[in-house]
Length: 351
Ligand code: NAD
Ligand code: IPM
Ligand code: MN
Image (cartoon, rainbow, N blue to C red):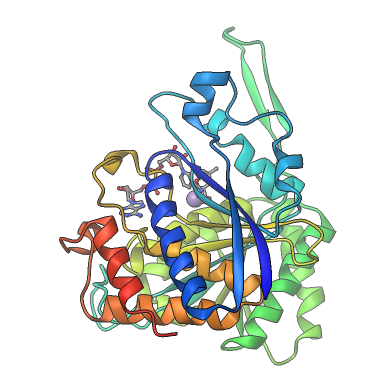
């Protein structure tokens, strides 16, 4: 029997609500399949931890996470109590220090889910976000604080190695899907970083002759995500552009209650991390109505990464059939609460 060690990081807001329900789904699959076991350890980091200990996570949090096969994270952020850049720091550090450079964010319009766009839409795309450098590096400073001449410097770092590896990851993903890759740029204005992205795309594309390649500026791509999302297959973007486009991809496919995300270290030198695209949703915290699907689908991505593909597929099939039946939490226009939605997903599991 295969056994895996999973670190659970519930976080803040609706993070613990959706993670608890996801663990129920994982336990149901585990006990019905009897081919693997997940040994979970929960870490109580986040805003409450900060109130108690004056820090959002202990200083050695990366060492604590390193021995795990995977990390399953709920959501972080409690902006009314703690500045986001403080609470979110461990999340960014996990992604960067564990070299989880490929952030994979699929967005598909499931049958039965209302789409905010007009017309009959078939949306099935995946945003591949560079997750280890770019606009998110901790590089800059604040100067002359409080003075009239105060300034802040925040400089992105785009490396040849970083761009090459995420583009190759995107090409390989496209080869397994509909053979199309769109790279997001803004080289008409960002003449250093984004011009380097453009040049490396030109260099690498010939290695993948079967893949149709195009590039779009981030502004045009945002428009096209709304105008003709069905035209996208694999979309590769820098850290910040990928962040923004993945929320947009989420809302056009039914909202942030649905899209999952994986932060992958493809070389498997460090643990990878799985989490919803959404945040801690302070506007619905404690109401018990958060949609658990995004987190449940993130757990399915984790099972795939652990090569438990049958279990992953089983969860995805159940989510799809549950949505097709019209089961819905309030974000999808329904009445079900978080637990009731999860109950149905567990009931619809077909092992
Ligand atoms: P958000 O994703 O938390 O919420 C955006 C909107 O989507 C809200 O109206 C929310 O109610 C809704 N929503 C999100 N998830 C939902 C779900 N599962 N079910 C139903 N509705 C859902 O974004 P925000 O409000 O901009 O950010 C809130 C906090 O989360 C901030 O502190 C932010 O920094 C943080 N954040 C964290 C992560 C993360 O942990 N990975 C991601 C994004 C934002
Ligand atoms: C996400 C989030 C994070 C990001 C924030 C909370 C730091 O928006 O995971 O998409 O920008 O990466
Ligand atoms: Mn985001």
